[in-house]
Image 1: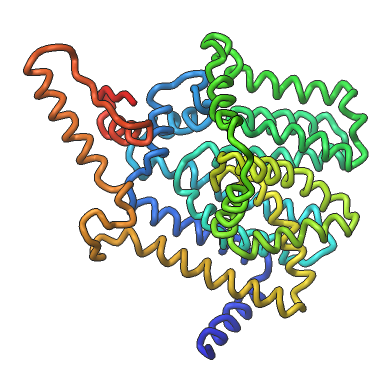
Image 2: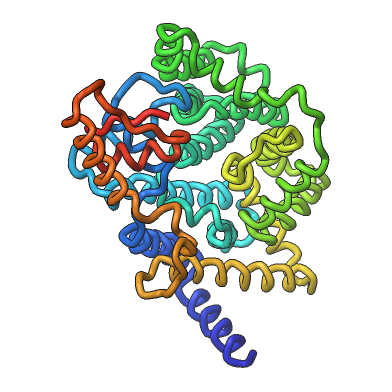
Length: 426
């Protein structure tokens, strides 16, 4: 459409006028501002309340995840405990991660376009999962810690300095405190060092200093499990391997790939696959470093999906690792008409989905009873207050102390968050 083409032309002229790095600031901070506005319109999602309760019930670790999300939310709760306050940390972590991935793109491919960092951040903003960054989940600190792990692995390859090794140990420790799937990062570090010709450095003293720092940082998780019959490890193994008697299903694995296509945009998904082969053929050491970090995650969870174990957000870190290479591939092949068509289609779809995200919470939109798309999010505070009233009525009637029983933890979290004194069991 002529009006659309004119708008794009003017936007392009404006970006060229301000330059690549100021444009990157505008892009990342602009979406952060949008996320802050969205954060004021929605109550907490069920899993957000679960992790917010971590901050009330502080511990060294928890049965389903390491403690980082709880520690962060506990720090925020020292100042405020509103729903909006619980969104500040994930938005800050997401913003920092986007800046870091833009810097990584420019440092790994210094001879390419100065717009590479901007393009990397723009590709990520086209994904639905990055706009879920208003919600605190273990992926929020894991994403930043994972990118720091990639950064310091590259620094070790480049300098092999004690500072780089200590930074790598710190990043691995933060990742281990964030989520158990951070174990893939340890494999990626070894692969990256091998591809970078630095594998022998693991036997040197400064490497052991860094690894000792990582072990010290994750010690709260190990100690908590040692005192609690290794509950987290048994839970994770039982959850992930619980369906091992079922046959591996190609249909389930393909379903997960279609889910990834929607969650991470056609551009990042299809362009990322093309970038994998382009990076392998190029022989570029830094391109292969990105593949060493992205492919273990994508392949592991892609295979696990065949056993019925999959969730779109599990692969977030893998796709973010792949984004700089995808951006480099996109700019290198921009002359190709099919690449421009893919980009235009994916951008249009992303804009449409973003509009839906922004419009759906508006209170004046008409929806039939029980037909609101956010019905699983809305109304929990009222439900929690009603549960307190019923519990008090039953307590006044005598008998054993009543508790609120729910189907699973997805329902327990919101009820307990809005009334922390409420006893909830699943």
